[in-house]
Image 1 (tube, rainbow, N blue to C red):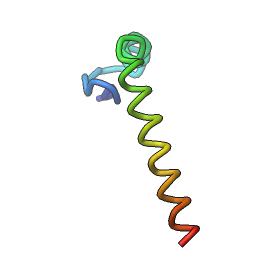
Image 2 (cartoon, rainbow, N blue to C red):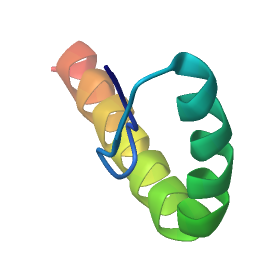
Image 3 (cartoon, rainbow, N blue to C red):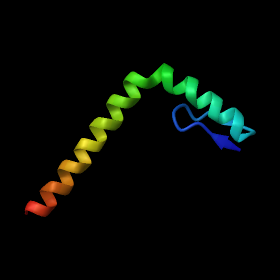
Length: 53
């Protein structure tokens, strides 16, 4: 089984998952991208803080 990383839907083939992922990503791009970039900058900041101290 293949799971969509965005909505956790399950698919029986990789091909079906890939075509779903494209649509799913477009639908949720705003919220997902904002969340991911925010998460990334937070982890980069904490790495930076560790090096400084």
